[in-house]
Amino acid sequence: MKSFMDKDFLLDSECSKKLYFDFAKKMPICDYHCHLSPKEIYENNEPSDISQLWLSGDHYKWRAMRSAGIEEKYCTGDATAKEKFCAFARALQYCVGNPLYHWAHLELQRYFNIDTPLNEKTAEDIFKKANEAIKNGDFRPRTLIEKSNVKYVCTTDDPIDTLEYHKLLAKENLPFKVLPSFRPDKALNLNLEGFPEYIKALEKAADIKIKSVNDIVTALCKRADYFNSVGCRISDQAFDYVPFETADEEELDAIFNKALKGETLEQLEIDKYRCRVMLALGKKYSELGWAMEIHIGAMRNNNAQAFSSLGADTGFDSVGDCEIAQPLSRFLDRLCFGGHLPKTILFNLNDKDNTVLATMLGNFQSAEAESKIQFGPAWWFLDTMDGMTAQMKALANLGVLGKFIGMETDSRSFTSYARHEYFRRIMCRLIGRWIEDGWYAYDEEIVKEIIEGICYNNAIKYFNFE
Image 1 (cartoon, rainbow, N blue to C red):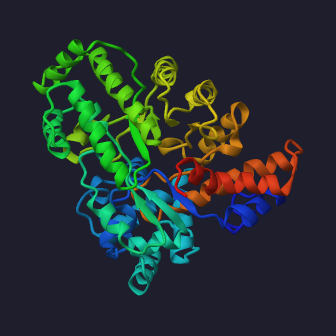
Image 2: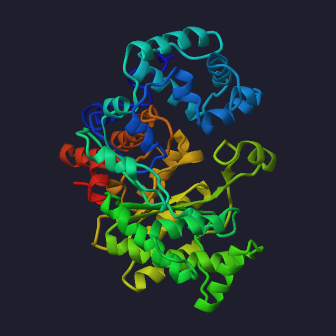
Image 3: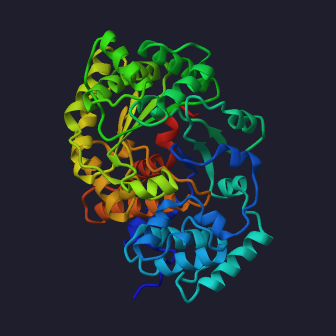
């Protein structure tokens, strides 16, 4: 029996160990998609305890706790910090094979120097030791980012955001950069409650009157220029599927006015509006030299009662099963035909679509950038050992794995950078096996470039960060 999560965790061959310890481990982190708060990074406050650091806002942990039969008060309710932590530990001991089990223990090891497995029996002692470490050490956001060897943090920001904290952080002599990312989902989701109010806020932010779809495009492009001036190089959009339905301006404006009046829209109408705005935004992203992230396949807010009481992003989302290939192809082709296709990163949340996306890439590549169209890393429900391995295998089988831009955290936690280590170990395990089995020739210079590229260098080059 191997030791529990020792230094060779997941590294099952001599080659995988060499790839990890000689090449991957030392590489910095470019976290090009996350949900960290720039305000929290700027204010840089010490967490009160490990429960605040770990459990506040972490829907991964809440889902596991609910599945273990734990009451909601220990997740989002008014239980004490210690009670919440012990409840999480009680759930964690049953999470056999869940990446949450590995992430939690990697974080305990790397940030708290605690090697003891976390379970119901050890919870109180670990709670005490972790809080002593917080009390006597430095667990402020900036320190955790720096300690994790992170060089770029790309937050997720609405077009109406002022970006005041990004600008304040840019004035400080930090060893890392905190950059905004442009996420126009609220402007695209005209079918959701609050859309009319959002348009008023967008009017104010862009300082223009919005009376038509063309006005929305103008406002969003104006805000994109502002984001660009603050260092933004990435946009991000989330869809069940990428819409591609065309309509003339008169029909689009009629759809837009229905939404402003709060009238019910048909899905076809929603898709026509989203397609028009996204085609315009894609052209703008191309002009700015940005990368366009498209996250496909989340089915959100499934539990109406929970959404009513707890709101969004509280652990009641799951994987959708829409057909995505045809509209995605037409959308990318329309931008490509006009010479306006930006660098694009395609993320899928349903692993049935791995081959769809891995083959879609090759349709639209060009010499503008190495692997201009990227297969985004396994995310959310797929950032498991199996999910990451399957995504890399699909890319290796059908694309160019050596130009992959690698992992991002997609997280709200300042200790979640252990997920990069998890990814790197899994990657080195996979490539190491191929080399050990004689499937790939070992040229140290080339292999080193590939591993270091996937860990960090490819992303830096892709996003033009240096």
